[in-house]
Length: 407
Image (cartoon, rainbow, N blue to C red):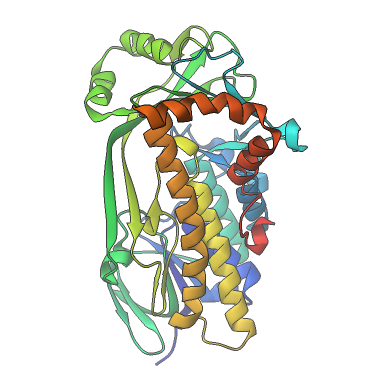
């Protein structure tokens, strides 16, 4: 039987669209032999005209390089993207502006910035536009069934049957691809909710990402281009519900208290949204002719802002592995090929996930002797040039086993 597409990527979010673009640019597979399938395909839109999206990402240098290869970076930068040059982190036990606060500065390692704050909808629109320019098929339909045959995968979606050599599940934490392929995922509830909103502050954000470890969670202020900040406030579920229900004035007072008034008087400038927090790890990233990327394979706590960055690195690593397989005249959908991707990305993702969980347990919510030692050690990190540089390089995606598009 004939093959409809060499690759079908399920999921038209930023990670799925980026995966399709990298496969088209790096593997030798013709763009018109790659499809992105989703129940909602974004309409052609100029990212600059989109309404403000409260969900934002802190994109690392590695993600920037990947998005340049995907031909989406210019559109992202043009649509309210905000570079940030510094990051200031402190624990609730110390003042925000004293010598015990931990400050990371791009200038210390000769970089122009530490990353860029960009909205989720902007990323999606820019990547969808790049996919259309490249000639990648964007197909609307909800995935209903998936059957792996010897030489192909058969997808049932929207009353159609689609045959492909490889399927990539980029359909998020509730991945239908993962479910239909029978891959188990372990989930851990953090017992926290992240509240996101936009705020204005009396003092300028100074192109700095600010984060305070609270003892029961974290509060981050991410700098936006218009001088406002995007907050990500991760607190226990019961407290989050109270914060969401209280008046704007009470909400503002709570923010100022938790943030130790680091940027002065704070005013709520948008609605408030919530996201329950949990950790997810897929038992396998791959099965025969199927690979999982991004949140379909792993979900991490947002306190380090690494979720999307890990997903873009997954996309780039998968493109490298499939390109190598095709160049060697091997079947790129064979399990022995896809396992190279799994080994590579699982090891990298687990290192980052373990580090993030340690920050959450010891710094954000830690009690006891070990947590106290970790909290006291933050100023030491600030005084150690070597350790600081290692932290910055890992956060920016400049360290580790990097795929070609991220180098």
